[in-house]
Length: 535
Picture 1 (tube, rainbow, N blue to C red):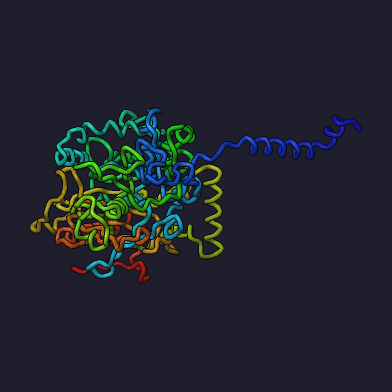
Picture 2 (cartoon, rainbow, N blue to C red):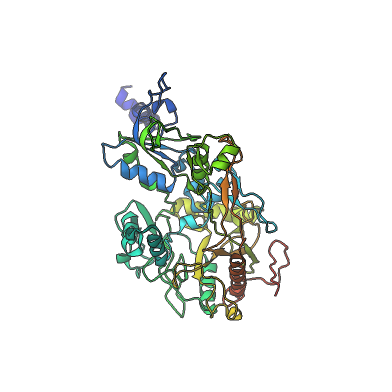
């Protein structure tokens, strides 16, 4: 039999051979990884005079939100050499980081720092602090009240930070992805050509509709867009529902039309950016100390490596790294036998964090997402159904970030808090259009260990937006592998206690306001769900 005749008869075998040949060709031509894990590619051992390092213009520590943006923008100039050091691995390779509903599975794993606060004075308050503090907020595009920007501009004495000056940069980074389900979106208020995809592609939970309508009935005004000059106060959600009072719009999310989370790594460190010859990105590289050259009088510079050093390791690890390097309160550094480079009492001080209260409710309609942590054959089948929908269409409960509705309000609103009309609280906000309370509704019960609650339940989370309590980040020891001592000093002011109590009472009231009251099961006596408020 001739070769051509043999191939016609054995087409299946020929197809397999062709696939093997193509795969071999691809593997041989495969480019080297764009992310570096071999440190020798970016540095060599010191010589006797300590000058054998490769030198960079900028070294960026931390590949989170700020670090990825800086690395991308700085290396647009081919003359600038940048080294980005990230202690973790790439999030693009983690399924849990890409599917909106599964990010909580990363908590307390090798991809998480597993940080806790020190025990707090208030009973049973100890907060787990995740690696990115992602939780619900990170998937929602909410920028803050305009007066917050104006306040910061006044504090630093630079008007470029004001809302009117700064809002152009939100439009610059946005790449608004339109949806035919939302024809009433004002596209002129959204950026269209930036690297970060935003849109209205997250899941739509029926409980969000009920929450929004209950908030409106309780006296919280509807706000079609939290991110305009009109301000933040009001209520909104992430799906279009049409109520008798208003036409519902949505909360912008960092979820693309395929139902995939958009991270700053995915948006800014694209293959094209990583291929730049003037950028090196090293993963799994934990920075333990910054070496400074103090030989020049009245000047302190990073030693040998670079001209500029950018710490983008957020509110816990940035002060920790500075103090390990000799910059911080001198008395504290001396306690741990760390040579003082700069005595700066402000490093690690004035820590401010948002307190969130988990108000759990049983629900009687069977629409919550507790089955995403299945407990029997029925819930497993529901989960497989949703997995199939997400795999095929990128929609369904797996495309939810669980927090699909939010309301912003002020604790001194006489309509919402008539019982406190004669009991004022300190105004810690930046102006009358700035809220100090946020209420978030979630489509599932989430426990303190970040696991999903089994059964039917939902939560409303009152959150302090402008706390007055401040705390510290301090070193446990001079060992960089020891976790720092994180003391937020939660609820240490009467202001914070009073405002949080008002938020809890308002959340309880909304849960029992029509139509959300049709979802809330007040007869359920599960101790993990039952909530009572003392007068």
